Image (cartoon, rainbow, N blue to C red):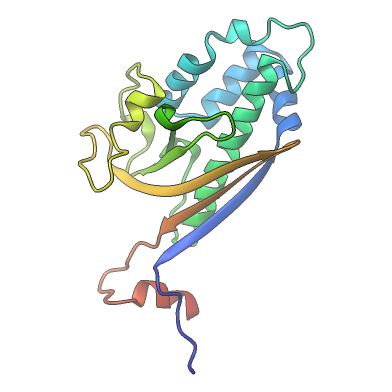
Length: 199
């Protein structure tokens, strides 16, 4: 039987991030280090959602010792997951020739279905950088309602491709996997997008 291409045109990316390393980075100079990390990793919309979830940055460093169980530790765990997820998306799209930055990727949590063990998230790869959209104050739930509906209309201010991601945490590590559709090239018909991976 001849070699058959994978039947679905998609790409996969994965990444892993060390949580204690993130904790060390964001507590190095406290407010300054965390602010710098947030501006690098999160788009304005995501930074706003972060503020809604964790409160003012001043409150994150109230505890004398910053450990995995302190508020700063919880923040580091969250940010390590976001870092791994965005790197996974970048890797999934790298094989398609598109160079993404962290601000090209918008990740929001679906607060309506959160549990103690998991944080379901949706990821949108923007057609334009997130800096081109207004950073209106809204919660994770408000943001996700704009593009979460399956096959529904995308909110007017956001244009992009929804991709599937999964974030996991275990001990000192956060891992993430992204499954993204393979963009068809001009003139592709049938399964040619998937078949290109063989040649």
